[in-house]
Length: 212
Image 1 (cartoon, rainbow, N blue to C red):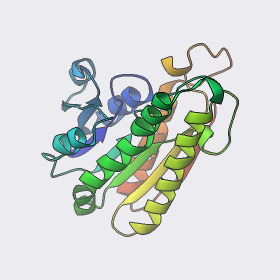
Image 2 (image 1 turned 90 degrees about the horizontal axis):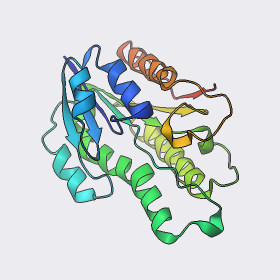
Image 3 (image 1 turned 30 degrees about the vertical axis):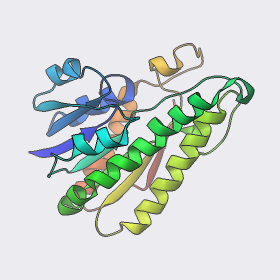
Image 4 (image 1 turned 90 degrees about the vertical axis):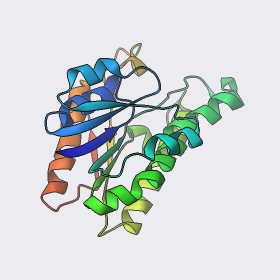
């Protein structure tokens, strides 16, 4: 059975992707806390519980994974507020979770992905293309994630495939207070499935922008 690791799998987009890939993959369900809820819903799964703000913990958790076909970075934070209102700790935590954790995990699991000619998917955002008020930290992390993803795709061409998904407003607790139209998290999961199926057929979807 093919294997996939999904960070942020306990809720929102990450959970929807874990459930989608769980139909035909063994899933490492990434969570900063208890992952038992999503693991119980999947046919073949195990928890990957790690503090994504701790690089050493990420390396230790990933050390036991020798085979991997799909890696999905779906964990993320959205520190809301104006630039003036956000403090240094909020900025650092946003980059630690949204950017550096994905980089550290990719570095740790790159050999396994290379062995399978596997697929890396980053869950980016429309905020990876444009800024908006109240989103300085979030937009900065998503621009950084997009740059990392695009450069890695070029460097790893022929060894792994790299896809960046850019969902618009999605119905998760991250933006629960936003009353504008939103799409379900399952729509993003279906886009992730499209990238996985394309990779299995020898093609790469470089990026997908998904709108509600």
